[in-house]
Length: 171
Length: 171
Image (cartoon, rainbow over all chains, first blue to last red; front, side, top):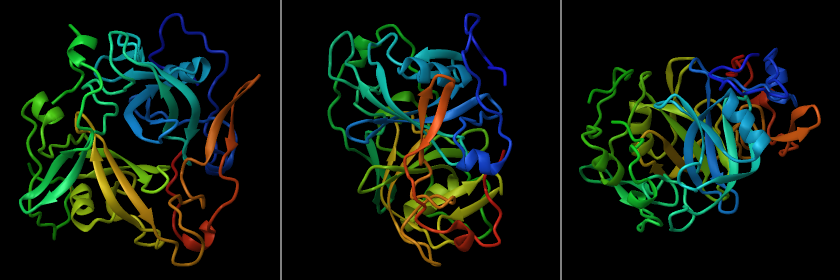
């Protein structure tokens, strides 16, 4: 299996297994991930100590390879069409303690610990300034659902940490 | 915003908010989820007590609406192009205790408790017979990565619980 979207210098030492049967994929010990039509696989990132889901992103073949090899989280940015190591600009790196894969091998979990932003603040993962990206819950009101903040304070100042950088959120 | 892929009898009592600005989406209290080109939003389902990620699936607008309204997890099957309530055939339902949404409102978390299969076995979520879909971790060997089972025993017999049904795993 060839790596798609790979950077020029990328020379993997091993290849993902091909997906030959449902039994192999579900009950086997070969790493045979399914990359979707865009060449990516979804990834859920959890804090290794609390189990809190910090973020959700996508990996291409190279990002998953580098995450396994380097033990730091790498992702594929679909909007920028670019491989990135989490924290490369902010300092908010994700040290990988465990990598899990699901039954049909089309979703990854990373269990990570965090480092703090280089420019000040507490350990965090979310570009908005909260510890996790999931800082709001859906509550019910008479007029339908409304969001409620479950993280009430930002742990770093995004305007300092991401000064001059484009907000990744797309409408 | 119209609901896509809706069933004929579906009459929502409220609508999702439109996405007007990054500030509204990231810092506001309106539920303004982003459904992708296929009309779906990814959903991470965690056990409310342990924090273990049980499964990863997709919702369309109707599935998210029904999940919020009924407090039982509903998903959209991309392979079957069908709305389903988790557990409708197996009995392995997911009672929803909390719904979270991320910074740019393009990913959902459900915190759920589980019910056991109607035909016998312990509470579980995964069609293969394990409690969670993430029953294997990626380990490193000299020849590259290999999977290791972190759940070593199935908690129900999938051939009994899903007798006569097609395996949802696609190669």
